[in-house]
Length: 396
Ligand code: GDP
Ligand code: MN
Image 1: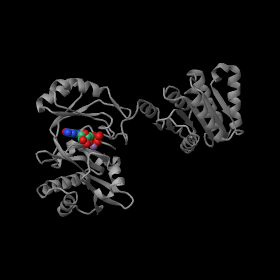
Image 2 (image 1 turned 180 degrees about the horizontal axis):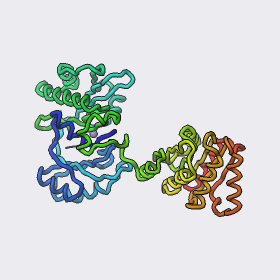
Image 3 (image 1 turned 120 degrees about the vertical axis):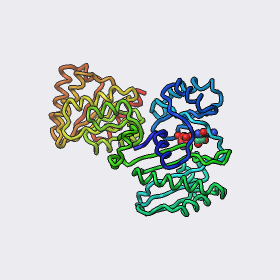
Image 4 (image 1 turned 45 degrees about the horizontal axis):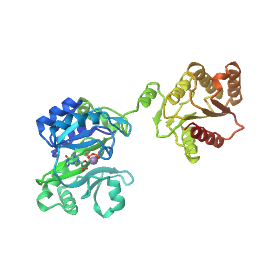
């Protein structure tokens, strides 16, 4: 699980890693107050659980005190990759002479710990690795190996640090390693590690991902307000709602609402939609033997998502029977109503009964079925996926 930059920095501080001075602001007023205390210029940093904040406009450097409240207001209105900015880290701005990279991660393929340093920091390290592999320097350790200062010193030399900075760098690298091991981290990254105009090495950014399964070993994290959270970021409002209802659900970027029966069918459905040129708006799993209530809620999540233009439904009746599936959909149509075009298919256990339930309900209230096309085994799944892509295009 990811930590916020300010949380990661708090932990780095315990291991002697030099950090900019600053404080955390939840309002423009607080940002102004902290700026006043630390003095200009300051950097305002949006705290969200995702990288690339700089590029997204979430980092502002400012030297006029009177501009701070306005800038802070602007950042509080910002959404970065869908995540609202609720706190700002206000720090004394560094005078950057050089941006370096230092990171520690687990090499899963080889069961090793990898320490990576580069003189090209401040940018995406994957890009550096792809375009200039010669600028990436590594130390590979067996899981239980110590990280010796001579190895850290060698890294400092490899990234071309002047000899008087080598000790400082080694101290930071060893501190980061100790943090990494002590907290069961999966990733600990300083990007950029800044060499300032006055010749200091300071961690300008901090990115940490911890192993969720080892959280119980670190009671102090809970005291800091760090508890189990979503791997890549906060939950979206819909993901939160789905979790409350016990439905495995993930928002994606597309416009086709995915209403599958089961995770496997869900994955296949997403593949089909992409193959035919569409973009799924979500991933979802109904779980085994879902109740009509649960199925109806799954549809609510899709129908109320403004991004969704059409809904794709596919049920293969195994343990979960198609007639129960049809009852759930009918329940949704009666109680909620469908506002988006939807195409769906049922095969497997009790599919004829499922289709019959639909046909009967349609006879009773045809207006509820205006936007829904349903099929049984006669139409292959590819056709359903194609049709969903078509419906989304027509609606767009
Ligand atoms: P990220 O984009 O989410 O990784 O956020 P960072 O904290 O790494 O900031 C992005 C970039 O903003 C850095 O690479 C720097 O170029 C710049 N930056 C961050 N803090 C400072 C600072 O204190 N002074 C200056 N001059 N630039 C900064
Ligand atoms: Mn960064």
